Amino acid sequence: MKLLVLLTVVCLYGLAESATYTTKYDNIDLDEILNNDRVYAKYFECLKGSGKCTPDGKELKDSLPDALKTECSKCTEKQKQGTEKVLKFVLEKKPQDYLVLEKIYDPERVYRSKYKDEAEKRGIKFPDK
Image 1: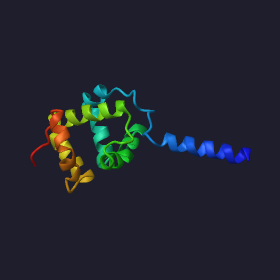
Image 2 (image 1 turned 30 degrees about the vertical axis):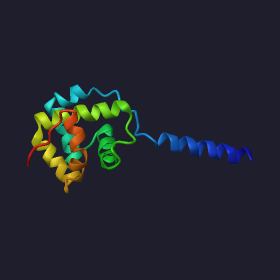
Image 3 (image 1 turned 90 degrees about the vertical axis):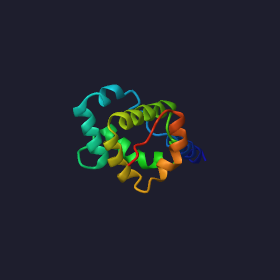
Image 4 (image 1 turned 60 degrees about the vertical axis):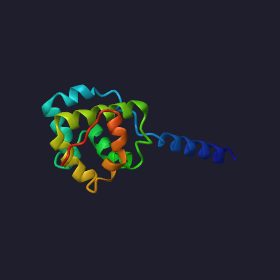
């Protein structure tokens, strides 16, 4: 009986942990990545599948489809803030990179349509093409 209770607790703990994406990389300096062309390019290459991924880049690449699909339901508040910061940066300063990633992760532009109103409320505008 004790073993059954222990297994149940372990399983419930595992389920609770998977309720959000890992927070292991939440303290990464996004400004340092976004404002360093060499580092930014490495992450971009990872996301588009043309380069090696750092562990945090791989985590992002693996989580991105689910985050788009579920409206970032497993994101922590810090991850949501980081997502908005990165999205604004890419759309304002690297719109062609956005379009490349959109073709990979949202070729039918389903998520663009889904998130357009919320993005506009936050001052985020998608490229026309």
